[in-house]
Image (cartoon, rainbow, N blue to C red; front, side, top):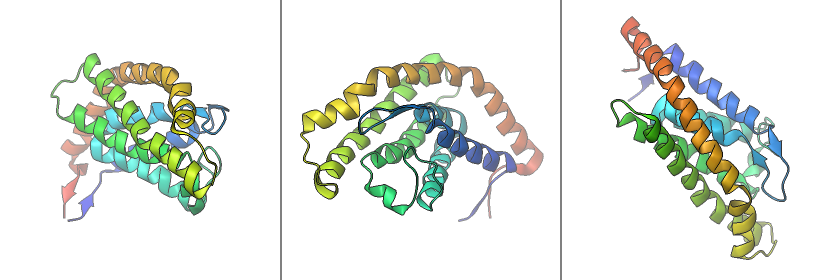
Length: 197
């Protein structure tokens, strides 16, 4: 089945892919894993676009980077899958989907729902990223590293700041949700909604 997307949906997917790319360059350099603001836009994509479009926004971002555009924190290209931080990008896509799925299931989501969803999304990102980091360093980069060291550089060094970003993104999503939800309903009522063809 092929889906025809409304102009609004395509614009929102492209916009959040671009915002995630911009977030990659708002960073604090740290050893191995730099701290960036990308994750804020991942949280917002899931909360505001829903599960499917939130996921697509991150897949577009990843796809653009893998074809060679330097939208990742350390460049781009297909070989970026070998970078130890690529697991975070995979985690972004999964987290956006799960966050969106949680919000979609609630008729009138409130502050606690958005914050709860973004915090869960945060831990999903780390659940994918930290093992990927360990595997990348120890196997294809041949940088023998212990689990404890990977846990420190991949989780401990940034979890407090990211936790704060998750809460902030949840609060911001609550403010923006009605605007996005109303715009989506309006596009559907005007015949631009997603339909099966």
